Image (cartoon, rainbow, N blue to C red; front, side, top):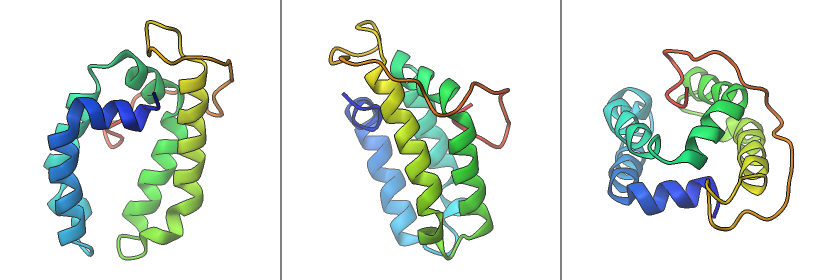
Length: 124
């Protein structure tokens, strides 16, 4: 199971509220939906696989988040950043141990290295 699927399974209502907020606030979602983003993060942080992704992919997620903050009205320009994060998360998912997720199969090395936590990155 991929990390986003795990998050959706564990935190569906939180993701739903956050998604509706982002869709309703295209120019100010980063401000207006901040609390909802934190609620998704808090919910997801309880799963071991999500904790590994937070640790191993924090660099690419941070780059994606910075891009969104710098281009709040042009989120599509951040596609390369989100692609890098999703690739990293996929690599972590594929290398997960059975304790992390029931569908672990192959091994791969995450693209990002672990980094220090950051107050501005909710995935840390």
